[in-house]
Length: 593
Image 1 (cartoon, rainbow, N blue to C red):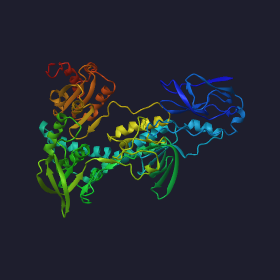
Image 2 (cartoon, helix red, strand yellow):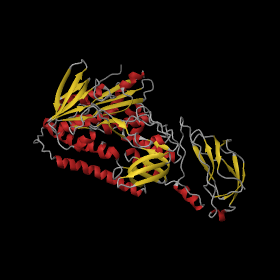
Image 3 (tube, rainbow, N blue to C red):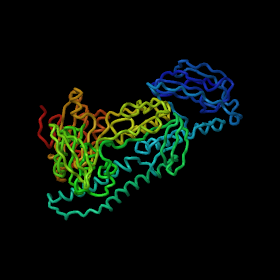
Image 4 (cartoon, rainbow, N blue to C red):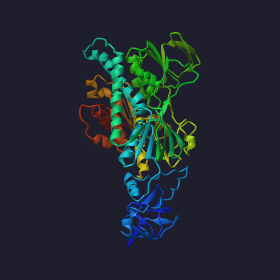
C-alpha cells in the first residue's frame, strides 16, 4: 500500500489548500491522472497520481490546509490497472476561479497528460489548450513557446504569416529603409576623409522591392517555424464570445468557432490620428510612410518621438525637405538632454527646421498640398503648406471591438488591459501581452511577456519582473538607454553619480570619423552598482546590451572596469566610463572630485 504524500509543487511553497477532489475511495486511477486541485500562494495546481492503482483511502477534504510531505491518500499500486484503459474516469471538478483583483495562473494539462487522459476515456471538450490572438513579436513568441512546452497551440492572425506590425509595418521595414538612408549619408560624409562619390541615383521601385523582400523573408521564415512546431495557424480576426470561446472571421470568408482553455491576447496597437484633421492621402501615418510611394519635395513631421524621427530621417536623406513640429520642449522625451543634443546637432544639418513647444492648430487640404496652421509657446500663429504630412504622435492599444465585454477582462480608461506579473488578466482564462498592456510599447518587451504568459499557463513559476527594458532610437547617430536616466533619477530623488566618456577620446570612433558619440553611466554612489546607462553614437543599439546585463545583474563600476574590453572598439567607452567613476580613465583626464 502506497502512502501518497503531498509532493513539492514549487520553489518556496510549503503548504496549500485543497480546492477540490477529483477521485473517491474505490476509484481506479492511472499514473499522472489528477487526484485533487491544490491552491497555493503562487498558483492553482493539479496534483497527479504517482502510479496506476486504486484509491483506498483519502485523508484530506476540500478546504483543508495541507503541508508539503503530509500523507494525503493511500493507493493500492497496480490494482485495477488492466481495466483502467477501458473504464472511463470521472472528470475533475471545475477549477476554482481566481479572484479578479488578484488573479493567479492555473496550468493547463500538457499534451502528454491529455494523451494519458484520452487512454482512460477522459477527453477535453476544448478545441485547443492555448490560443494566441495576434501574431506580432509577442504573439508568435508566446505561441512558439507554448508549443515548445508541449501545449496544443493555435495562433490567430490576419496576415498570411506571423510577424504583426513589427515585421510587416514597423520595426523591420523601417530599419531596412534606415540602412539605405545611412549608406547615403556615409557616402556623403566620406569626402571628409578623402573619398568622393557622385550623387546617388535613387531607384525607388527597387528600394521598395528590397524592403518588401526583407519582410517576406522574415515572415515566411516564421511561417515555416510555425508549421515545424505544429502550431495551428488560422488567418482571420478573432472576437470573444465568452471567456473560453472565440468567433473567427477568416480571410477566406468563412467563420469558425474555437473553444480554448487559455487565451493570450496580443492584439497590439495602431497609430493615433486626429479626427478633426482632413482625411487625405497627403496625410499619412507610420504605415503609410513605410510604403514609400514617392519622395515628396516637402513634408511636415508631426511628433518628435522615436517613430517619427526614424521615418523622418529616411525621407530627409532621400531628398525631402522636412520640418519637425513637437509640442514638448525637447525631442525624444524620456532620454537625457545631453544624449539627445548630439542627435539634434545632426538633425539640424539634414532637416529644414525643428519647431519645439509648438502645436498644430489646424490642417486644410489644398490643390497641391496641406496647409498647416501652427501656434508657438508665446501664442504666435503662423502657417505653411506642405506636399505631405507625416503624423507620428503615438499609438493606441487595440482593445476595442474584440469582444472583451463578453469576458471578465478589465480595461482601464486609456484602453490598456490590466494584468498581473504572470500577464494574467482579471479573467482566469485570459492572459495579455505587448502593446495592449501598456508602456513601453516595444517588440522585445512583448516577446518576453509572451514567454512569461506561456510559462505561466504551463504551470511554471514565472513573472515579468525585469529591472530594465532597453530603448533604442535607430536614427544616425543612434540613441539607446536602459535603467534610470538622469532625468528619472532627479525626479525620483535617487542619489546617483554620473560617469561619461566622450567618443572624441575613443580611438575606434576617431578611425570611423564619428567622434560625436557619448557613453554615460549612472552609479549608486554608495554601492557603485550600475543603475542606468545611456549611449549616443553609431551602433548604440548594439552597445546597450552590455548595460542591460549590468543593470540586471547589479554589476558595479569595478565589475565593468575589470572586464577586459577589446581594443580598439566602441565597447571600450563603457569600460572607460566605469574607470572614470574612480577618476582614472586612461584616455581622458578627469580626476575624481
